[in-house]
Length: 236
Ligand code: HEC
Ligand code: HEC
Image 1 (cartoon, rainbow, N blue to C red):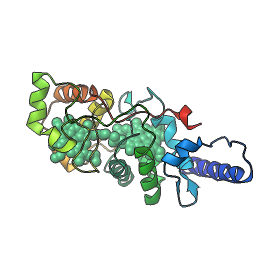
Image 2: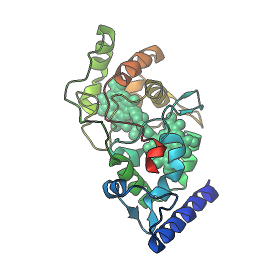
Image 3: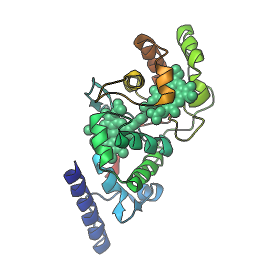
Image 4: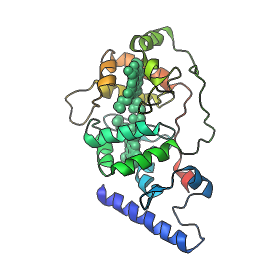
């Protein structure tokens, strides 16, 4: 992974050099508009080289991972930067155990993590608008009871997209199959490859059966979202 990452860095540096010497578009150059709206770089390495390795999974509509089961790769474009950074630190320090994301995060410095988190938060919004306070649809009576029991909205916001702290995630409209896997992960203990140590969500997820977590995930995932997949083709 480190080797691969270094190769991406080298590519990025080559790209900047060729831009400096000619007006011809380099293979990895972004349209000027996108370069203006996304933070340019941290240190001397362009941010686009840093995110090259993420794009293959997070920037492909419909892309799925297969561990520990088949589920959609989470949307991170439009997510809060501080939450993205917190999640990457949790993979890096082992609080989140997903093996692929652990090795990805292990290759990132703290400075990289901050730059990448800002980049994904600030990607161009396209058609996505800030959501009204009310969720875009009401839950059925059963799901309403589950939400009330755990007070989900007291942390994730009335529309599930306005968390009370910047290091808490927006969850409205996130892929339902991913939400379900994430919720189960907070419950999982004593497995070296699966699970998330988070005292807050651990206590909450353990109050529910998996069938109830699935109902919650399906409802929250069905809501309008500020999250999106930023297709890789738009980077070209
Ligand atoms: C091989 C595919 C793959 C690559 C490459 C990859 N990711 Fe991930 N990422 C995933 C999967 C799958 C998950 C869900 C893991 C889990 O269940 O905890 C994930 C989770 C995440 C999360 C947590 C999202 C959330 O809502 O909690 C963040 C943040 C993230 N990735 C950022 C990145 C960044 C930044 C990069 C590049 C430096 C990257 N990923 C590279 C597949 C990938
Ligand atoms: C006391 C505050 C609090 C409450 C109440 C709460 N959450 Fe969370 N939630 C958090 C925090 C903090 C995180 C981030 C944990 C981490 O970093 O892994 C989180 C993470 C999540 C995630 C993972 C999102 C992702 O992108 O991976 C899901 C899904 C989730 N919460 C759903 C719920 C649901 C559904 C409820 C109600 C049943 C709920 N939460 C109640 C604070 C809360």
